[in-house]
Length: 287
Figure 1: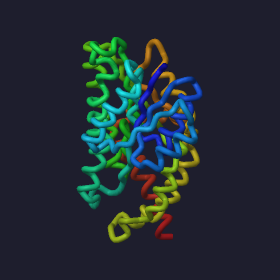
Figure 2 (figure 1 turned 90 degrees about the vertical axis):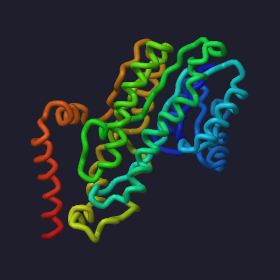
Figure 3 (figure 1 turned 90 degrees about the horizontal axis):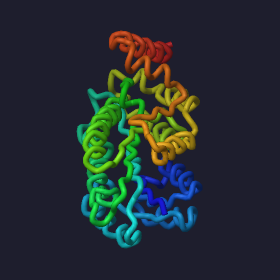
């Protein structure tokens, strides 16, 4: 049986990927934070799904889940770990609460290392018990190669994940044969958009009010060009099953534009483009 662990499967990319991989015959072990989610997913997905209840920030709960999974799988290990759990903290860096900024990095960066370290033995670093070499898929973002205004905290976490993934790949493959890939996902059709719109403008008292009060228009525009989540799931499956997985995959509807802005355009050109874009909404707000 091909066993894959995915973190954060209660919704979004994690949920859709769990369903997709199960349809391909994988047995998916998925992490959730609530027992109610575990029960609902078990009923929904059936025997090819095994829930584990832990928060990716909780070292003790993760360690207990490792023991639980070893008992469930017997002598079998994991052929893949998909570090999907994450969140998006956004806002102007001038005013973002520092504890929120720190939590963004804790969940999206530190916890990837925390979870990976815990489950590495099942991926093949413990050759006494598991002779295979599994794979690690980290879910990054195009925000890890380009930073939009007010996405500084999220981009900081995804830029850091680029470095973490590079280090993992360059350390784990030579040492253990474990291959590591990064999915630089573009905007996807997930519940994150509804959550973002529901937050409202927390910074109405700041100089950024004029542009941020139009944030729902900006969000709706991004949502309209978002990629269907199943397309990201297909890329994750490819990274897990291809005989020669790529270091990076970029599923997005605007790959050429992203690569131009990230790797070709000079910084000052990107600055002017973003400034022009923001000024449009300042102008709309004052008219």
